Each structure stands twice: as C-alpha cells, then as structure tokens.
Amino acid sequence: MSFIQIENVFFSYDSEDEGQPVRNAVDGVTLSIEKGEFVTVIGHNGCGKSTLAKHLNAMLLPDSGKVYVDGDDTSDEEKTWDIREKVGLVLQNPDNQLVASIVEEDVAFGPENLGIAPAEIRERVDKALKAVGMYEYRHHAPYKLSGGQKQRIAIAGILAIQPQCIVLDEPTAMLDPNGREEVMSTLLRLNREMGITVVLITHYMDEAVPADRVVVMDSGKVLTQGTPEEVFSQVELLKKHRLDVPQAAELAFRLKGRGLDIPAIPLSVEECAKMLGEVLQ
Amino acid sequence: MVRDVAFGQYFPGNSLMHKLDPRAKLLCFVAFIVVIFFTFNYASLGVVAAFTVFALISAGISPKFYFKSLKVILFVVIITSLLNLFYGSGEPIWEWWILKLTWNGIHRAVFVSVRIVCLILLSSCLTFTTSPTELTDAIERLMKPLKVIRFPVHEVAMMMSLALRFVPTLLEETDKIMQAQRARGADMDSGNFIKRAKALVPILIPLFVSAFRRAYDIATAMECRCYRGGTGRTRMKTLHMGARDIVSFVVTAMIIGGVIVCNILLTSVL
Image (cartoon, rainbow over all chains, first blue to last red; front, top):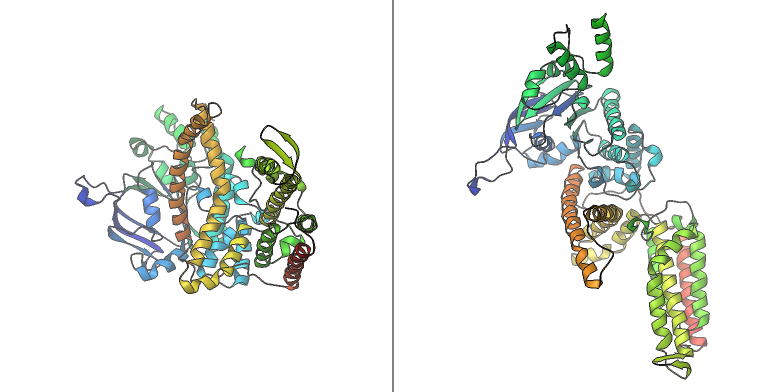
C-alpha cells in the first residue's frame, strides 16, 4: 500500500436538503502518493485541489470513499492525531498560521502540543529553523518578516512536529517572486536532503516543473497525471481546460504549430534555449 | 500611522529586567502600580518616581520607545491635570471667571500627572521586556488555582496570547483598509464628531469580516499543528524562580513599606 492512498473520494460543501443540485468539490478522486515523492497538484481556483489537501490530514473527511495515511483510515477518530503528526498541512496565508509573537516560540507550538519534553522541543525547533534557513531570525517578531520568510517559519512549525509528509496548500499564492523562489528551494531541499514527502498544491505551472509527478485537477476530478514531461507535452488537453503550461513549453508548442521540427517539449528556459539552438543550426 | 504605536511591543534583550521570571515581574509590577495610587505626599511620590526610573534603566531599552508610548497618552495627562488644577479645594490663590487656582489643585495636578506617567512607563517597561508568550504563561501559572472553580485558565491564556499576536497584524490591516477607502474617495479627516464616527463604518465592517475569516484560518492551522487544548501540553521555555526573583520581591516589599512609612510620618498634601 502507498503512503497516502486516496480511494474514490467524493466530498461536497453543500448539504443535500437545500433542494439545490449538490456540486461535489472533490468528485471521485483516486490517487496514491509514495514515500519520498515530490508531487505537485495543479488546477484552477475551485477545482477542488485545496479541498483534497484538507483530506490528507483528516481536516476534512470524505462523504464517500476512503483516505488512508500510512495504512490508517482518516475517518477513524482515534487515529486523527497520529495522522496529523505524520502529515503536516501548510496553508496559503502565512500570517494566519503563526500563533506566537516570537519566531522560535511559534515553531515550538506543534511539539508543545504533542507533549514533548522541553529539552527535545528546543532541539527540534533549532533543527527545523536551520532546515528552512531561518535560524538567525529565531528571536524576531513574525510580523516584521517578509512573506517568504513567514511562510518558511510556517513550514518550520510543521517540520518541528517531524512529519513524514508535508502538504502545502498554495503556499506561494500570496508571495512575491523572491518569496516564491525561497519557498520552492526550501521545499526541494527538504524533499531531496531529508527525504520528506512533499505534496505541493499550486496554480503556478512553473512550480510543477521540478516535481517527480504532476497531478492536474479540474472540476473535482483528476484530469491527467504523470511526470512533468508527460503532463506538459499534452498542451492541447491543458489548453482545452483553460490551464497554462510553463512558458518554455508554450513557446515550443507554438513553434511546432508553425512547422518547426521540435523533438520534445522543453520545460525550463535553459532546456528550451539549448533545444532551439540545436534546431536552428 | 497606526503602526507607530509602541505600547505592547516586545524588544528581545539580555538585561536584568529581561531575565526576571515573568511571574515575579508581573506580581511586582502589579503591586507597584497599586502603590502608585497610594502616594499622598511628595516623599512617597519621590520614592515611586525614583523606582520607576530605576526600573527603566535596568531594562536597557532606548528612551525613545518610552517617549513614543507617552506621546499616545499625553493628551489624557494634560486634560486630567488641567481639570485637577482648577477643581482643588481651599483658599484660591488666583481666580478668573469660573477658574480658581488653589495650592490643593496644583498638588493634585502634579500627583495625577506623575502617577499616570509612572503607570504608563512601568507597563511599557513590562511589555517591552516580556514576550507575550512569557506574559500569558505567567498569567496561566498564576491563575492555576482558579482551575478548582472550573475557570478555563488555559483557554483564557491562549486567547490572550493570540490576541496579542494579532494586534500588529490587525493594525496593519486597518491601515490598508483606510488607504483603500481613501483611494475610493472616503473622507475621514473632516467634519464634526458624528460625521467622523460614521466614516469609520466602512473601515470597521471589512476589518471585522477579515478578522472572522482569519480566526477560521487560525483555528485550522492550530488543529493542523495538533492543538487539542491544554491537557498534555508541554512548554519549550519552562519558568524558574531564582535568587534574582526573590530580590525583586524584597525590593518591591521595601518600596511598599517605604511608601507606607512616608504616609504615616508625613501629612497628606492632597
């Protein structure tokens, strides 16, 4: 069994007795996430990706279908806290996730809730802050930091719980390009160096490029999934659902449409430049 | 503009004041603030003022922050001392229309303004040197006996620390909303009192809506971080009472004693 197993999950925010047709926010999703994977879920606003994220740590329970985390059913109330210890969720607005007025005290909030001994909390906090590169800021007040720094503190707050998987619900949506870059490189490092499973939910196609696997969602369903190369070469399918592709892929796609002999769809600017150089020679 | 408020801010540091146990600090400050209102002659007022200065120096924080917090209440100080100045009893030394200046009034004005200034300086000193978490921790520990009567001690302390955490965030938000409303032509700086109060409505409504939305988010984030109430929770920073804290109790007791002695030996000027 995979680390996270989502089996035919349906979920709706509407209640049935209001007489209106029920619209499912998550409409029959089946998905599995392996340990150590970096998975990006992309899709429009309202496609159900955030709702799906909240199912991964039992914040929401499916109307029908099952979600298993490390073999435990999320609808089993006795397992709720075990599951939240294994799967941490980082939300969109960093301001609303920081609960203490000093950075290190905020990071300590999670382990404090778990009832860990003070000396070990200290150790975990220092380790988590170092992992996101915010150790020097441990005595600062969060409201004085930049958006990217705040979001890294929020990630450290989850890391201190020592989860096996971090789910991030559009963590970069409210950040400027610098902040986005900071958060992305932090996530990649956590995944590559510490082996933490990362599920990144985003609507920036460029953030999907470094992932191991990309899952595209539309109106509550999984539209397609695969490696970034596989997914973004389906430019027509994505366009049909009004989704963008990375700019490099878009350029190559259009050139191909004009009859240029493009061997494969590139994903990054460097790749694209190299390929165009070869083609033009 | 709203962001300039220094009151309630915390400045990390290593001074004597910072190192005191927050419980000891809180108790001493509360005792001291009560004592401020029991000064009835210049000797005891002097003792209180001298200790206030000592407390500020031992906190090692730049005076400009104290001036900032004083600036906010300057208006209150002026109004109350003016009122006291002309409402004293006894022989008038100067009289004009309904205004009547007496020695009693002058004493009262001096006492009132020194008391308010000391009060503000000391409470600023407390919040400048104690992180909100420490402060609410101290309150939680000190109120622990109330658990016997089913008082939700942990919940109150958590609410306080969250409230303190979100003061700067909500101030910033207020600023943003005001700017946004101004950009749409809202007039907030002219007109009479009623007109200005009405102009606040388009600021308060979005502020409240966003505060509720935030509260929902915070609750989610806290649950995501395994928060399930106060039972079974540990703290990273544990509180320890040390020799330093005993000394602070002794000093406070001596000052209270000094003020009482002054009050007994010398006659009240008020």
